[in-house]
Image (cartoon, rainbow over all chains, first blue to last red; front, top):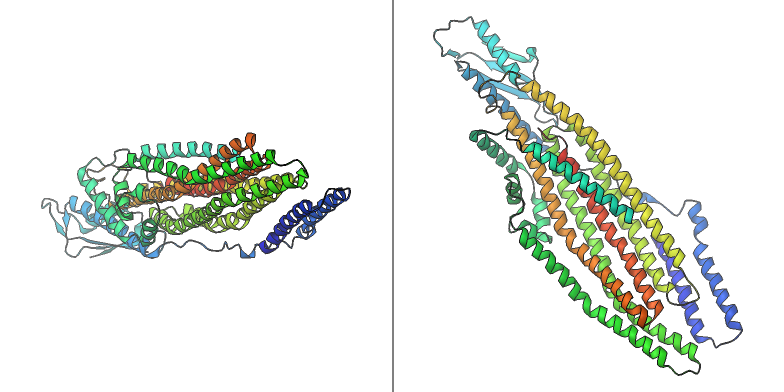
Length: 167
Length: 396
């Protein structure tokens, strides 16, 4: 596209320079006037010559304008970040369980770390080594499970059936 | 052109006010406890360690943005911005700018002086020439004067063209380095809708729009400069109207590209940002308890991870903009100084020397605004897009 444009511009510039040189060389005379008007004609011709091609739409091809590239998201970083988030939720739940007076409860959060949208898939609660710190409380294991479930639901956006207890 | 600049100014004001509001909101002291601050610092440094900024470091070491960054590398600057000290050496920046202005004036001074001298000499010879066969000799004198002036001025103009092209290319390289990081951080914060808006917008800006600038607008500048050169060569053939046609094509193309891009990006971005903000808030409510438990905030680790991602995202944006300013400011100052000195030249030449030389110089100075507006428009679109990304999906 632009080789033809530059050819056009070069021809305009060339014809004008030529007319200037001719004007310098030619002696004064009645012929001078006619030569000038001929040159003006040629300039107009050169300027409008490529316009019909422009109208037909063949002058512009935007094929070399490349706009299909996109920017890629750094998957490694997202993966690492998802691990941090998982770890953070796990730590929060563990510390709150500890505050409620239970020890030895292992919570592990499983999430889709390779995905760009962070989502918790399931939470596993291991209660085999459960120690109740507050000796005065003698509770049913199901009650404890209920309490742990409420702590987990407060801290993580999961459904009730996604929390899996192992006793 | 004027309208474009007014538009740029107005949008800059609006944008800066949004930044300001955003920063106020963000500065609200959520982190009352010192342990929380420590947790946040920990999380930020962990996440910064994962960030891949090698490309940006390369750009920084090769660009002229050293004054703005001091002796820091990219990561150090990032962490200093996150901790809140933005400009530790603002006086040195101003000194560097002033030095740039005077340096460019000094470098143009010899050419200005010789152009003025040549055209005054030409005018004197013109008036002293023998009267016989005067017309032909007069036009030869004009030809020679004009030729010398053109050669002198075009030594600088060709340099300006090279500077503009390389500046736009370097903006493109910066975009290629900054945009993936911004998108990654936006994803990490949870702005998935914003990502789906900004990912194509960024690709559009960095590929199609920059291509339009270098492949379409740059040739228009060259053509109009070449035509203004030949147009002032003789009295017979005048191409002023044709040049003004080219100039208005340039203005319309740049204005349309600018307005359409900015309009779509900002409106879509703001909408997407509000959607994301809502979903982040609901996620936060789902995650965090309504009932305040003692120590709930401190142990709320997820919030810290998200907040530090958001801080890093904004710091990357700020650093990218600093890098942009550092690489753009010197070409813009050079171009503006050159344009002003051309105007001064035309003003001095006009009464003393040749009218056509003066009109050539002044039309060239008009054309140079094209180069300036190309750089300004590209960098402004970049600034606005980065600003939108910084504003969206912030955790408040």
